[in-house]
Structures are given as structure tokens and as C-alpha cells.
Length: 274
Ligand code: ACO
Image 1: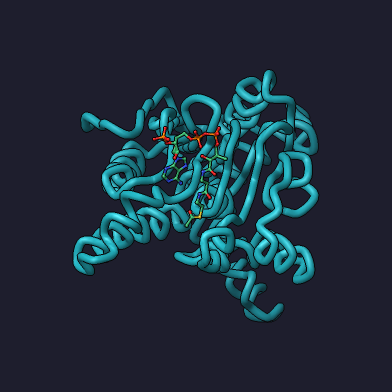
Image 2: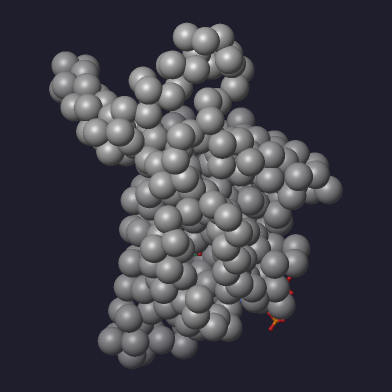
């Protein structure tokens, strides 16, 4: 694993944790941090983990883009400005299409680009005490770089999306759940435990089925129903082939013997590599 200055990457068993580690700057994302995130996601993907948790050191999840290092300092040097934002686009695109399940563990401040990161993750477990805001309009721009897209994807109500985009009013973790940005809110003191419970649940499932569940969800969002049926049956055959029919041979075989209740438990995946 590479030696990083702005993030900490840990891989244990089937899961990885990436911690943005600029707590003195509220983990705002500088060009150097973006470059490290590009590399870290490549390394974590190569490790074939099932789950990746993204979180922040100290009292902040992500204080947005580094307004000085990304924007103010580089604006007069277009090539440097472009390079900085390109790094951010590169890892955001990779995060959106990531094969492992991505969990945002939102422990504190979450502004602008931080909301984009949380919004791109598959699951967000958040502290009730966390503070969220689309603050761009407060310094004269609109939520850009994919943040308006993520707002539409996570906050389906137009009235809510425009309200928070236009006023930059902040909201807490509980409200983030109500608005659609987060999956679950828990008191900060229980955030690590609550996140670990979700990670442990996912680790009991197969890596390939988790990946396929994500792919099928994303691809069918824009399909009509007949196309979705065709696509979903084709993906079922593909999944079965890649897992050597594990769902029939192991999961349903075990159910036939009444060894578990699929409504309440996961079957034991037959091989580590699936
Ligand atoms: N860019 C650059 N520096 C930042 C950022 C940022 N996004 N966020 C925090 N910092 C710096 C502060 O300027 C300060 O630096 P200093 O110690 O050199 O003065 C340090 O981090 C600590 O922050 P404080 O403001 O002292 O901490 P406080 O707890 O009082 O406030 C808060 C935290 C509310 C997060 C505040 O720092 C803030 O408003 N940050 C900007 C949030 C924001 O609007 N981000 C941009 C989103 S839009 C986008 O991402 C495109």
C-alpha cells in the first residue's frame, strides 16, 4: 500500500477504510488529497474487498473542496486549476462505479464536495449531530463538479433540493435521512458500532452478488420495464455463471434442508472468491 500524506488507508479481511486526514483543515479536499484518493481507490479495488468505508479524522467528515488550494490559489493558472479538478473528477467517477459497497461514515461537518462524496456512496451512516450544507451559494457559485447531479439523485423533492441549494441552510444528520442523503442516523457515540454492524452484515454476503446488486440498481433506473426485465434475467445468468451456480447449489440446497431462514439470515457463501 502506498504511503499517503492526506489520507489513511486500512484493509482488514474483506473491508477497507479510507480516512480523510486533514483534521486541522476540517478534511477539506486539496489537489494533493484528490490525487491520493485516485491512487487509493485503485489499490483498494485491486484488493477485491467487499466494502469500503469513507470517513474523516477529527470532528469533520469533509469540509468540501479546499477553497484556497483548489480554487483561489490556482485560478490564475488554468492548467494547474484544471489538473486539480480533474483529479477530483477521476476519483468521484471511480467511486460512483466502484464494485465494492461504499459506505460514507459521516462523523461531523459535511459541506459541498463532502455532500457529493456522501451522495455518491451506496450507503451513508451518519451522526445525528453532523452538520450538512450546500454552501456554494454562500461564496457566489452554484453546487458544481457533480454536486447538483448528486443533489438530484439523493434529494428527489425539487422543493427541498432547490431550498437547500438556494439558501445554503444547514441541516443535521437526522434531517439528512429524511431528505434522502443518508441511510441511517445514530448518535455520534454509537457511529463506529453502527457502521461496523452494517460492514459485518455485508461481509457475510458474496462479493459478486453485492457488485451485481449495485450494477442492476444503477442500470435499471433509466430503463423502461420490459428492457429492465430482459437486462435483469441476463444479469442473473451472468451472476450464476460467475459464481458457479452457488445460489442454487449452496444457498437453496441449504434452504431445502431448512438450515436457515433466508428472510432473516444470509446463507454461507461457498468460496472466498465469490
Ligand atoms: N477550504 C479551505 N479551508 C478550510 C475549509 C475549506 N473548505 N474548511 C475549513 N477550512 C479551514 C479553516 O479556514 C481553518 O483554517 P485556519 O486554521 O488556517 O484558519 C481550519 O480549516 C479550521 O476551520 P474553522 O473555520 O476554524 O473551524 P470551525 O469549527 O469554526 O468551522 C466550518 C468549521 C463551519 C466547516 C468552517 O471551517 C467552514 O465554513 N468551512 C468551509 C465549508 C464550506 O463551505 N466548504 C465548501 C463547500 S463547497 C465545495 O466544496 C465546492
